Length: 302
Image (cartoon, rainbow, N blue to C red):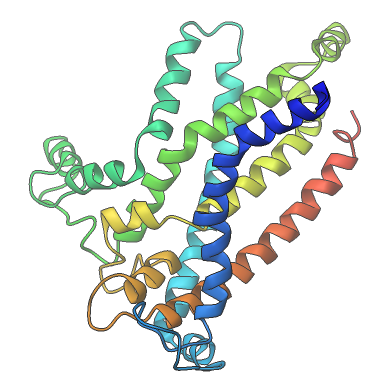
């Protein structure tokens, strides 16, 4: 056995555990979810009760599914439209030469990213709690509120709170992506523009933003896809309530497959997951084409 063959075998040996985990816990469940979707199955016993397209039809005619679907898309739109530009502005600020303590601020904004999402959700239940919650205490002592508000228990505020927490939770990651893109830009262009008399706003509009378009399209894609899956945060904070106001498709699927409220319907939940997965893939493909188009422009004209 020659050196090249031994090297390849060692490489295969090192990636084998990761490959085995991927096949067992990622690829196999994805394939089987498509199989389960065509059966009336509770998760136990053999697959015997073939349902055909019945699970898909029931999902499509279920108003609660469409409510969760609408909430998921609305959450994604809010996150993309608010978080992405705000993260860009913060990255520009943290890249400024005059700012002191940059490392501390970067760590501060990135800290929520490395915190377990379920833990964040549980903590936020107390922060926004109606009884002695931190938000209510601050607003009442500041004279803004006269009585506590049940932020997570009211249909008027629950979804907004989930959006705010969701944006805050992943804000640091998008900021780091923007920061990496900004720091990769050639400094010679900015120096030449400064010599020509360009101001900060002009350089931002005509140099920084066009050059960041490829990076921005990738950040947009990742933000949109990640925002479509917020199961752990919503499950810990509201469990989809009140009155399904914060219900997301991930929570909807979990409720039928694993909640234990009545007989589990893994087949029906799998059908809902397949339909939602198709939508997510379609959105990813559209945004992926956007990434390819902007990437091919090499930053646009400067």
